[in-house]
Image (cartoon, one colour):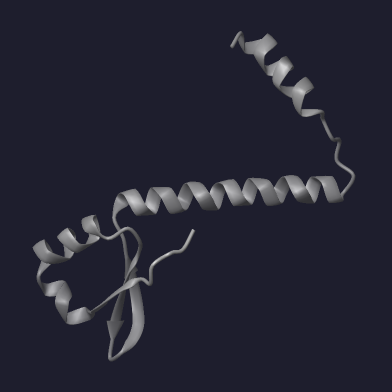
Length: 91
């Protein structure tokens, strides 16, 4: 998936709060706020924040699982695992 470059806005545009909220809602990614031409902060909609948070948490869990495997953790057959979950939870 190709990700677009982030939207960049100078800090003085934050004075127009109605416009900046509109930009946040319309932008599919974080917005970089610059001061004197350098990145100073990042703004994003709640939707974008929640999506990023979920992805970061999933990546952390995957990395934790890979570390467990590298350190001799027990491997469970996928079909066996799902059969057991269905048996326990009836789905």
